Length: 588
Image (cartoon, rainbow, N blue to C red):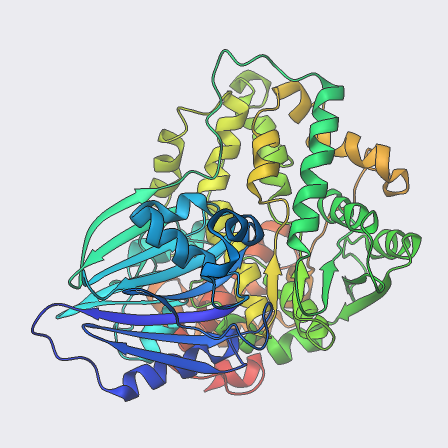
């Protein structure tokens, strides 16, 4: 896994000085601590920082073939098949990222349609002065662009463009409102005025420094309405083949790897599949547990599962003092802001795992593909049976904390809802909304930033084309049955690991952030209320009251969101580095 960045210029524009590229490389170093490389080409500059995973000795980038030069952040899982198709003699290295370059030589701008993997790729053709920017269909790997007078810049993270002085630290207030109400932001535009996302599955064509057109590959297969429904036994057989294929493929690595194990259905399924594969050494697993009397966790269940397959398992205990000490640094890594409190355990798990491995497998995507959230079931019920649309209420609705209640914060979700016409059912349409927005713009950003902050690569075997192909073709009866979502995945786990008790009631995974905030409510509330960015949007007296009442579920989530936003604004809008623990940082 790596960090990428670069610039392409319009004709007649002088290239940026080397110090701009050096600042980009410095800002990307956490993504690629094993070295930085540059390519200064006619009308383009490329920057790559490397985290060595495959072909440790020979896989440095940029990679070149003919008039093309490529840098990439990702893993191409069908690299062996591409090499066989093209012929090994055409390859100069063992890097899996050489495959996209040779596919481009043969297929041009359609090259990404032949890739299976997670990736953000920049490929520059010096002869045509053309840059292609491609992102994998699920949006596992991030990629951002900004246009400036004289060209376009791109990078793996918005913070890189800010640090290099290529984009101003100015904010879209509509995205801020979206962040407060949803805890993430949607669509192409980011919270920064001039920085935009390359969308999942998109290839952006930039000619002579300006965006010319875009192509798109969908993550979800096109299911024909007359397709005969799968029976349960046939579906279980196909799911087994898909899971084993994906997990085995995602284990490909020249460095040690492990698994984040929560005790839930998704990570238990990955553990079960991994345990069925031959390996030269023990599996490594990590689980978070919280020091709080009312914290829901399944650490004991996770440990029991890990020990059942003879995994080398560690439990990482997270305490309130640890969170207060490290929260400014945790928020600082979330440049594309996600106020999901799951960033806390993910960051601490990554810090611990990085002591032993360089690659982590994680269960993101299971809920979205196999229908795990209760909101999907609610969305398809009629109103008189308690049905309600997803994301219908914002975090601050009814709390009387904000000076002005945001009006248009749901526009991005509404746009995603409009684009679900090809989904095979109403239930699948609800899932598709989350696959389009919640998954790439919350869960996958969280995983990417928290792991890359510690030089770890994160892999998500459930977000793979072979798994999506079977999950998206399931009839609703194999997605949900009664009050149980993920029906088929639970049935598969019941067959292959009954000790996971997939049909037993689950405690869930809850970070006790509200209880922790409430214990420091007066102190934290005062500090947050005095921040200029908070006073601009909220009434200080109501903020202080909110923090003192943070023990409630809704008030706790709202207080956490304001705390996150205050720290995030300080770092990414004001440009100030963390200055000690959360109390010291907010006091300055």
